Length: 59
Image (spheres, rainbow, N blue to C red):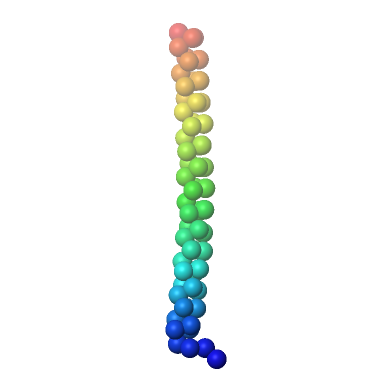
C-alpha cells in the first residue's frame, strides 16, 4: 500500500498546505486592516486641511 516515506511526504505536503492557508488568511486580514486604516487617516488629514484653509480664509 503506502511506504513510510510516502506517508511522511504526504504529511509534509499537508503541513505546508495548512501553513500556507493560514498565512494567506492572516495576510489578507492584515492587509485589509492596513489599507482601511491608511484610507481613514488620509480622509481625516484632508478634512483637517480643508478646515484649516477655511479658517485661514475667514481671518
